[in-house]
Length: 132
Image (tube, rainbow, N blue to C red; front, side, top):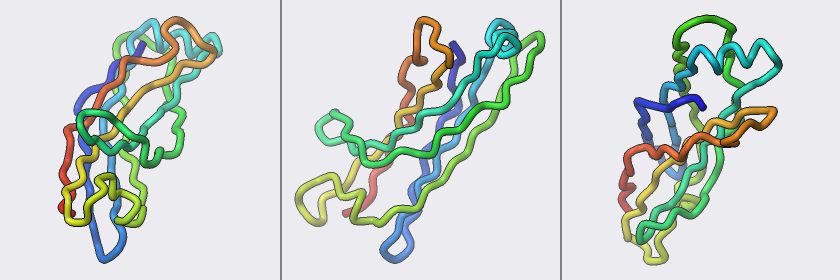
């Protein structure tokens, strides 16, 4: 399965809205690239989670993206950057007002048609704290 590296999560709040930006590199090896020539495709799953007590709770998901993998030899690195603006209130994952919200993004790549394993292992961005 492809690998994911160089993950970042940025939260930018302006007035009542927060823009969530997730960036990373997806790396496809020669086998995965050649599977594309036989009809396989790879698409993204990026889930923004609130982390309270170490448990991730889904807040929102980014739009699915089909990686433009080409047939070839060697690694192909595809940079991904996706943003979504939500209300600041929707990121309030702690019950008490003024309590900081710990946010992260779970990133996975899905192969279709499915070959074992169906998903890459979960890779998380560094956690960011949004002041309550």
